[in-house]
Image 1 (cartoon, rainbow, N blue to C red):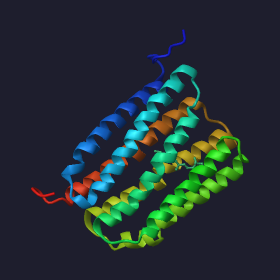
Image 2: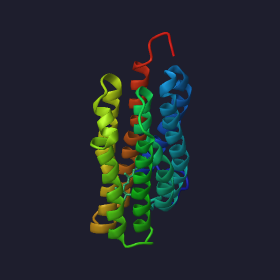
Image 3: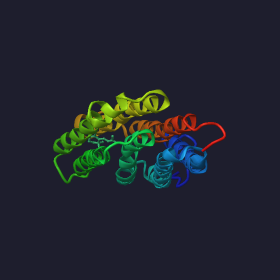
Image 4: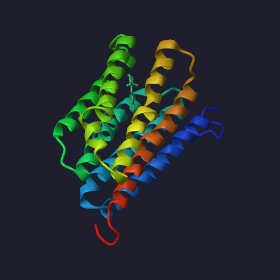
Length: 233
Ligand SMILES: *C/C=C(C)/C=C/C=C(C)/C=C/C1=C(C)CCCC1(C)C
């Protein structure tokens, strides 16, 4: 029997639900807690809440696509990425600017690199461009933003920091390197070399989104909180 709700043996569908509800809870958390941290960190917390909020909304539709058709909700994923991934990436600029004065060039390079990565991937995945060409352009964008946070101006500014802000920047840097590697690998196996099934791919993406959106936001929140002196804001 086809079910439009959720079958008890649909493990992938269950992961869609779990991540949806975790995203909803995180959104509420970030917006309520935003005023509990020092003013210079509030923009970062607002961005975290926007990321999880936008993703929550998309997850409701993605779950629907999965449980009713058993296929990957690719269009919804990309629309979600187009909004949330640039917001996540500019967090590096806001982490730095919460503790020091930095150039807005960092902001723009992170934003543009992220858009190149996503647009390349989308054109390849949607069949509007050769699959390999789209992948190469997307990888170029990703390598560019990784360069910026490791060795470019953002990385150099971060290297001068100490304490919770430095730890936070470094942790987020590794999320963007390791946690994000799941998506190009999914593209590689899904479109270029083959050998993945859609259920596994979606389970991995859902777990990755939990780390890359919720945990990422919580790490920033933890730094903001520990840099907010008790009894003050
Ligand atoms: C919350 C969602 C996140 C953090 C999604 C991130 C997506 C990527 C890092 C995608 C990267 C890709 C490449 C590096 C190469 C081309 C194909 C993409 C778009 C899958």
